Image 1 (cartoon, helix red, strand yellow):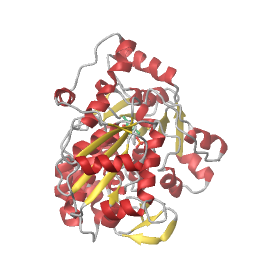
Image 2 (cartoon, rainbow, N blue to C red):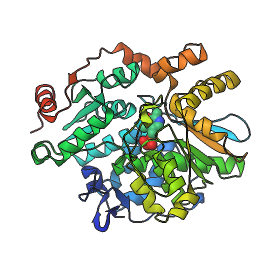
Image 3 (tube, rainbow, N blue to C red):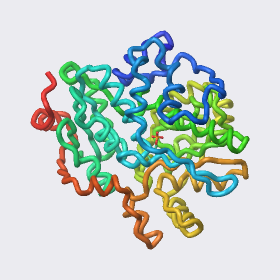
Image 4 (cartoon, helix red, strand yellow):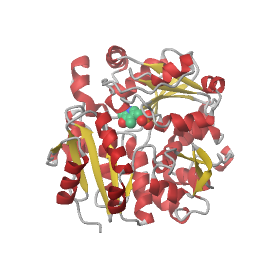
Length: 427
Ligand SMILES: *Cc1c(COP(=O)(O)O)cnc(C)c1O
C-alpha cells in the first residue's frame, strides 16, 4: 500500500513516512492509494477489539516497517472499552470516551504515539488544540522516549477541567496557554512548520487529524460496530458524527469504502457551518471559527474536507453521500436538557449535536457517536439539568495531580525560549 497527497497523486510515499511527516510536502493530506475491500466473514464476533482493529488496518501497513508491530501497537493503544448502547429499537449510542482523557481523541492519539515510538525518530510534536486533542496527545506521549510535545491552547477559551487535563503532565510535555484565539494557535503551528530553523533543529511533526496515523485507527470503531450491529440486528446502521475538522467522519467514510456495513453517514456540526453551506451552495468557503459550547468542534476551515472531497470530487456525488446538520448553541442546550429529562442520560455539548441531528431523520437505525465524557463540561451541563455530573475515575485522578498554567504571548520566539527552558534536550 502506498499513500499520496490529495493535491498530487504522483507524490507517493509509505505509511511510516506519511506518519512521520504529518503533512504532504505540497501542503496536501496523505490518503491511501486504494481502499482494500473486506469480506465480512473474515471478521468473527469473538475477536478482541485490538485483534479486530489489527485485521482492519493490516492492508494499510502492508510492506511497511510498522507491519510486524501492528498487533502490538493495537494492543497497547486500544486498552479501553468502546461500548455501543441501545436507547430503543432505532437509536443507539456509541461511547468513545472511556479512554485516559475521556474523549475519542485517545483512540487516534494513542495509536499515533505507539507508532512513532516504534519508528524511533527524535522529534518534537507541535499541536494547536481547542480542547481535547491537547490532553489526548499529552497522555499518549507522556514519557515516550526521544519525543517532545508542545501544546498550544487559547487562554481562557477551554473548560477548566480540559485545561487541567492538558497542564498536569510535565517531563516531555510542555503546555502553553497562548494569549490569543485558537486560530492564533493554529497560525503559530503553521509558522513553525514553515520556519526552516525550527524544522531543522526540532524535526517537527503534527498530531492533529491531518496526520494519517490518527485517522486510520479511527476507522476501526466504525468497522467493529457496523459488523457487530449488522450481525445482531440484520441491518446496516447509519452513523451520526459530531464533527469539527471532519477527522473521524472521514474515517467513517473510509470504513464504508472498505465495504463495512454502513448505510449512511451524517455529520453534525455546531454553529460553524462551513460544510452545511457547502452542501447548500456547492461552494466551499472557509471562514474564521466562532466560539460555541461544543468547543472541540469550533473549526471554520475543516482540514479534512480535502480528504472527503477526494472521495467525492463531483459535487452531486458529495451531496448524495454526505448529509449534514448544523446545530446552534441554543439547540445544544435544549437537547442536553431534553435527553436528560427523557432518559436520565447526561450527554456532552458535542454529543448533543448528534442527538439534535437525529430528529431530522426517519426511523431507520442510527448510531449516534458520543465523543466526550460529560464531566469535562460540567460548567455548561450542570445549570441545564440542575444535577451534578458524576466525575469519571480518570478525571478525578487528573484533578488530583497538580497543574501549572504557563501563559505565553502569541509569538514563536517566546515559545522557543520556554521550550529550551522546560523540555528535555533531544539533540
Ligand atoms: C475533536 C472532537 C470532535 C470533532 O472531531 P473531528 O475529528 O475534528 O471532526 C467532536 N467532539 C469532541 C468531544 C472532540 O474532542
